[in-house]
Length: 123
Length: 444
Image (cartoon, rainbow over all chains, first blue to last red; front, side):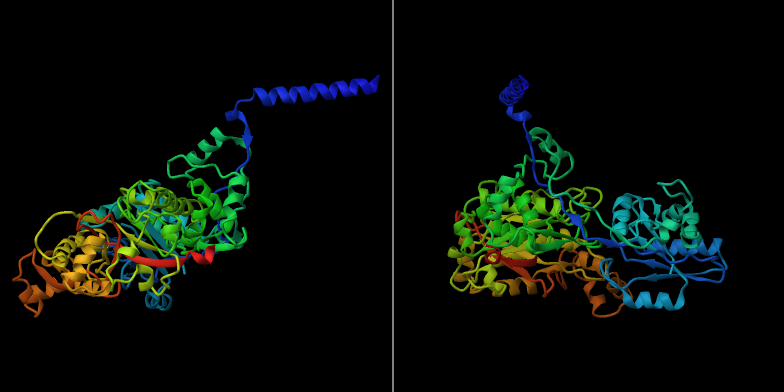
C-alpha cells in the first residue's frame, strides 16, 4: 500500500512539472548567461604620507599642472595663502610640458626643497 | 610628503575614481567652482576665498586641513583592493536580463544578444586560444589602473554585439591592441578601425559603396564589439566617471569600421598594413584616434592635392589642432580617406606615385593660419610686439594667411587609406592619428 502511494505521489509531481513547463510562456523561462563585465587588477593601497603638525616655517609648493589658461588661479592661490599664512613660504611652480606630461625634475625639486605640496587638477 | 589636491567640482567623480584606482581611496580633495580656464584673476580669487561648492566649507580651510589634519586609521591602511567577479549572472528571464544589461550600462543602448553558455561556447570555437588566456589589458582612463581580460570574456562581449564566430578573431585582435574605443577626454574623441588583408573578402567587410555607413554585418558587429569590450572589460565609457566627452561622438557606435580597398590601390600605393610593416597576405586590424571627418564632394577644377591642402587647414580648429596648451605640443595628425577614383587621379595626373609622397607634401604644406599661430604661441607674439625678428615681420601677415608653423607634426604626418564605391572623385579629410595594429591571423 505504502509503495503504491509513493508511486502515485511521484506521478502527481511529474504531472505538475509537465503542466507548469507547458503552460509557462517562453518569456517567463529562466536562463543563465555569462557575466559581461571584467574587473580591475588588484590595487595595492598606498598609505598616505604623515601630515604636517604646523605650516609655520614650512615651504609649500603650489603646482600648476598646465591645463590651458588656468595659471592665474595658482597665482591667486599663492597670494591668498601668503596673506593668511605669512609665516609659510608658498611657492608657485608650473609643471613642464602639457598636463599629460610627467615632470620628474620638479618632483625631485619639491622633495628637496618643500615639506608639502598643493596640486591643481582641473579645467 | 603631504599633498593637497584640488579639482574643479565638475570632475569630482573622475578624481575620486582615479585616486581609488591608484590605491588612495581616501585622498583629501578640495573642490572649487568650475570652470577655471580663461577666467580672470579676480574671479579665481573669489573661488579661492569662497567655499567648496560640494562641501560648503571654506576652500582655504580645506586645503590647510588636507596638509595638517592627522591621518585617520583608514588613511594609513595598506593591503590590496580586489573586486571579486562571478563568471555567471543569477538566472533570470530573458526580458529581465536584457533590462539588467541595459540598466547597468553594459550595452550601447541598443538591444544585445544575451551571452548564453551555448552562444559563447560556439564563439570560442573560432579561435585556437584557450578561454582563460589573457588577451590584453585596457585602462578606464590614462591615469587609472588597467583591467585584464580573457578570451572568454571577449567572446561574451562579441556575442552581445551580434558577432558570428567568423568575426571573433578580428574582435580578439582589436582587444589585443589594448586600446579602448571611448577615450575619457572632454573633447568627445572618436576611434576608427581599418581592416586589411584576406580577411576583408572572407568576412565580406564593406570597402565599397557605403563602407562607412550602416549597411553590412561585419562592419557593424566588429566595430560595435570594440565599444562593448571597452565598457565592460576595460572599465571605460562610464559617463561622468571614466567618460567625460561633452557631446559624445556618434562615430563610437561602430567606430568607423571599414576595410581598405586594396584591389583598387594605384600601382605604387601600398596597403595600409604593409606600410606598417605587415605582410600583404596577413590580415590586420589598425586603430586610430581622432574627432572629425570633413567631406569633399564638389567639382572644383583645382588639383586634388591643392584642394586637400586648403581643406585640411580647417583642422587647426578641430580636435588636437585646437586642443593644446599654448606654446607646447600644438601640432596634430591628419588622415585622408580617399575614394579609388581620386587615388588614381592623384597618381596618374598629379604625380603622387606613393601614399608617402602625398603624405609628405601635405605635412610640409598645411600650415596653421597666422591668427591661430599667435594664439598657440603667445611667447612668439610677445617677442613680435617687442620687435624681435623673425616674429616682428610676421605681424604684417594677414590673420587668415599661412604661418610658418606646420599643422601636422612630421612624426604623425598624414595617414592615407583608400576605400569607397568609385562613384566620384571624393574624399574625407580628418584629424585621426594612427594608434596601433594587430594581426588577426594570430587569433584564429
